[in-house]
Length: 101
Image (tube, rainbow, N blue to C red; front, side, top):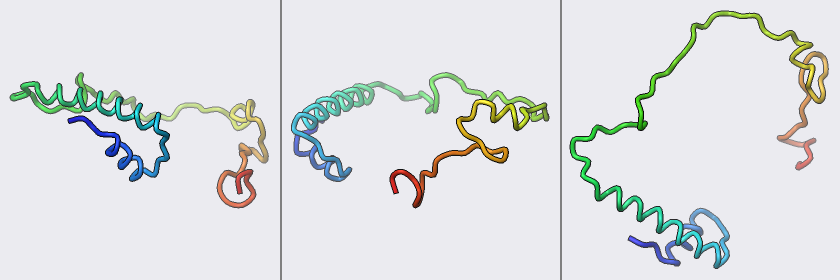
């Protein structure tokens, strides 16, 4: 199944993407390549193959939750660009007062 230019434009419209003619052509080529790989995978005989989430067995390795010494406030703030009253000072990014208000 190959995507047409109009199908790529329709998907871009649904995603609210403004694409140039060159971008539509590039994406159509790339999406068709991806669909080609999916078609190749669908041709494989996978009967009897158990579904997996990973290609190799994965086991969570967790350490015991034991308290350990931590940094002092002074050490934690040592390389901070700006600090005040024992806390990091960061620029406001949401709401009025930020650069992009």
